[in-house]
Image (tube, rainbow, N blue to C red; front, side, top):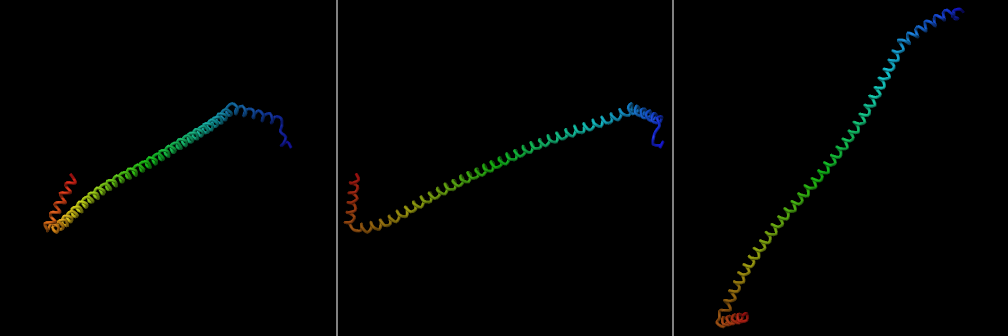
Length: 165
């Protein structure tokens, strides 16, 4: 069983060797390990900070994008309102122009009708007066054929003239 029970000298030299390895590691190894761990921690912190900055920039970019989209929607709505207003204005102008044109046509038609009516009245008067003269001429010829009828006509005309004066 000597194999499983160490002697005091072996334990002493193992302790000395451990102490030397520990001192060497403490003097040169441990600072390198700590420095590497701290560097890695700094690198991780910088990465987290960079990720947070990127996240903030992304959120800011999203907010700006939303603002631009809202502005674009507002401009689009304004353009649509302006186009609708222009459409209404053009329709109103066309309607007014059509009404004015219709009034002009109606006025011209009225003038034409009035002129034609006056011409027709004048023509009718001319024809009536022509017929009346023809009839009067025939009647006067018949009545004035004898001397007594002529004397009566002259007397009646003189009587009418006296009544008027």
